[in-house]
Length: 232
View 1: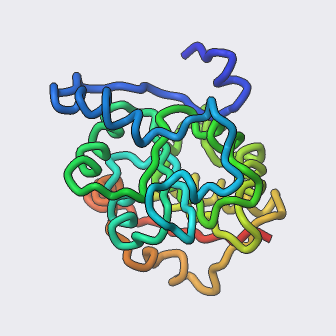
View 2: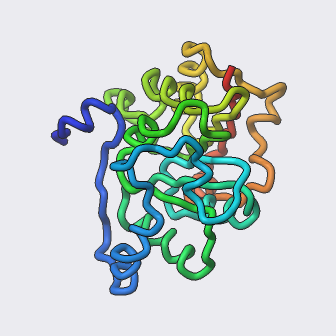
View 3: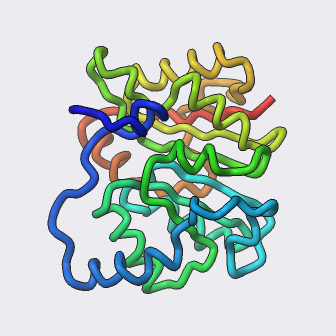
């Protein structure tokens, strides 16, 4: 596909943005609820990102590519004192999360519906407690590996916005992407892999709700890896 100048500059988003036509109620939410929850990158980032939320939060967590929003919504429900920012450019996926927000409220979720690198570059340095990149597109063909979100330039973005000692969590069922991420984090030098034994990275995260991508992988006979890195 032909990339616009912004995509080439950020080395981030590749792929389609919309699938099935939205239903009337979904269109209504995208028109009215999305602007209420959207992080406004046209405005300067607040010195304290906690002020983005209408409730008091003591931690900030960023999920890049939240898919159907199952994981993000679960974490927001079970961690009401954490402020979540979810990034997802795929319109239908955003519509699914907005439906949950509409039904349940979940005041501790803000969203961004475009290129995640734009948001990363907007965020203040050392402002995020955790970044989740879960079942990102693995771009399995070797000629497309350069499109993977994990790259040296994006790891540098992660490193800038994460607080000292904060974590980057990565899950995937694709061995080549798991190895790719381990190698890139090692080569970057600013991330310490926290695994002490094989069970550490083969065991899902605490209070893990699962995702539809993970369920599909299991149906197809693939196991998953759960990597945790600490910023150093």
